[in-house]
Image (cartoon, rainbow, N blue to C red; front, side, top):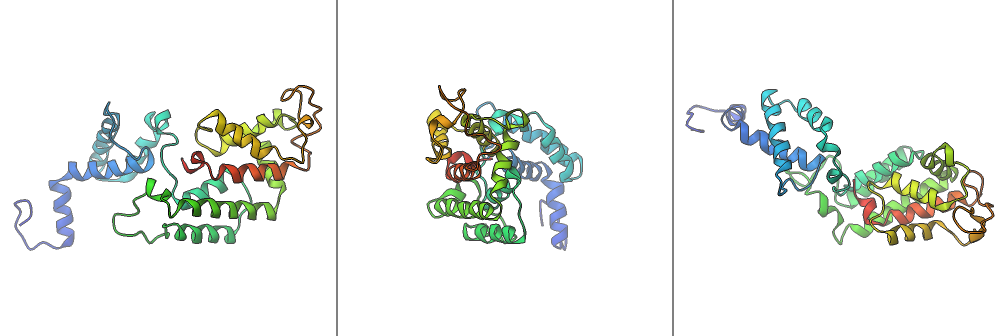
Length: 268
């Protein structure tokens, strides 16, 4: 007997009965998990905004006979999905970390790159297509425990180093794409660093000191301070130019290595 219904039930029958008798509870549970995966890891807030969104998703889920596509479409088109509070609050999984870097930088990659990302993910607790149990990975803060955080830093640096060894000039291309055509010949390193930071991180650096540290990583000793433009430093000679200076690829590489160890880089 299940929920007062007696019969010789098989597994499929039990599932059907569950969805018939507990549709609201099942719908809410699944939509809550979707919300926490795509929007915010904490679905509780004082204003109950998250609950309101989840309730709406649940209604859509049930009215569409538990089809996921309408639910995801509603979520991804909602204004709430693009709220400031929903940006940069989820910690990337290991594979997210590598894939996001490949997507955002536009660097050339091949099967070896993807194979390395898959192997590194397994080392950091995310064996693709083989979660730890039926509940899946615990996600979020579990990805940055003391066992995994240093591994994230080191493997990310290894991947960046591989990109640099394969084709250094793609690092200049990244910088020029980030600043846009109007600044492709800039001599101001702050414009370059800010553009790359904004492109690679969801909300930029948390503090001015964090940004200053990123600037220090970019400004190598091989480029004297007065080589930059007068819009950056008084008396600057504009001898350093983003589009042509030979030091640029190395500078962008060092900046990305620095950013890959920052808290902001771990978020999406």
